[in-house]
Structures are given as C-alpha cells and as structure tokens.
Length: 140
Image (cartoon, rainbow, N blue to C red):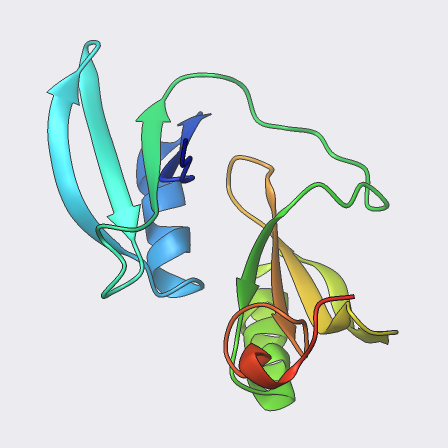
C-alpha cells in the first residue's frame, strides 16, 4: 500500500500575514481559496508542485512560541549558499531571522532559519541530500 504526503494544514492567527510570508520568502503561490468555517481557507504550493504538496492555511489557533534552540521547522532547499544568504538578509531586514546562516556537517549543510507570522520556524538550506542538486548526494 502506497502512502504519499500531500499537504500540511495550519491554523494561523493572521491568515493574510502568513500568506504574504510564504509568497515572499518561500516562492509559494495561492492555488485555491474558498470560504470555510466562517472565514476563508487558502491552499498554497510551489509553482509546478500544485499536485504534489501544498500548505492549507486557515485562520484561528494561537501563535507558536518556540525557543530559539527548538529546531521544529518546515524545510525549503535552495540552489546555492548565496541564496541562503540573500534570504537571511531579507529576513533580517523584515525582523524575522532566527538562525543566521551557518554550516553544519553533512547531511545538514548550509542553512538559515526564519520565523513566520504564526511563530513556525522555516529553514532554507543548501547542501542537504534533498532538493536541488541532491541527485549527486547519497542519503546517509
């Protein structure tokens, strides 16, 4: 029996702020929007991956209060170390950078971390055996 992870559903205190964050920093786009449970529900995906994996973002819930050393996060791979640094600089200017760019031993690679408006942590990495360029890297 095959199982495929298709979506992650999040309740967030400020729907519009989270939608904007995932557009700006993650390059995701709104692919579906509908009324639901007294307000609207938004589906977001990376371009070209609309049938593979989406975020379902709904209003409600409470902001997460994660400690800086809590490494619970959503992970996005990018094409280069430079892209990690660009995202980190944008996040620093926006006041949402939590982990400055850093290098960790394989398989972690080079990464930075941001806090979304709901308090979730979002990692941007290069050099992991997942995502862009990973075909040449073995998974340990």
